[in-house]
Length: 140
Image (cartoon, rainbow, N blue to C red; front, side, top):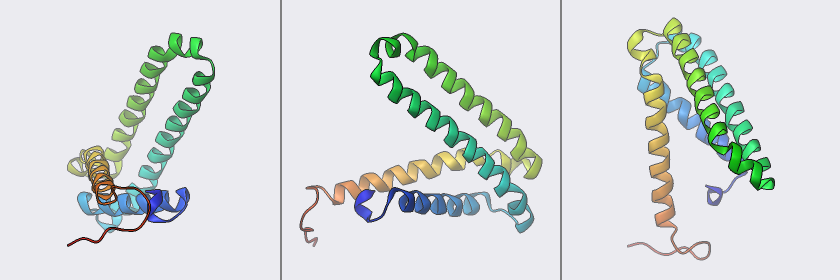
């Protein structure tokens, strides 16, 4: 993604905008639903991002102390998975408060679909750019 020209913040911003557009289209939110949904979804994503950052920080610290990392890795991974599940369970209930059941039930599925589409596009971009940086190859 760095090859697309832009800082990490710009790239993350573009991904976030694409995710919002994808979810809005998939969930087919009315203006009233959107007004209630997006603040809840933004809080959900903030909590998930914090959890992921904590996990990454722990992993970095564990690399520095390999003995401790070997002993605590399985337990830490289960704790991470449980915390992620707790967040999703909590927000599943919150989404049901602000959206009809069929739309609330589609939030996490649509999010997974977006990630799948994003990863596929990244793979396709990498395949087009095989050979690394340098002169672009002409395509027929």
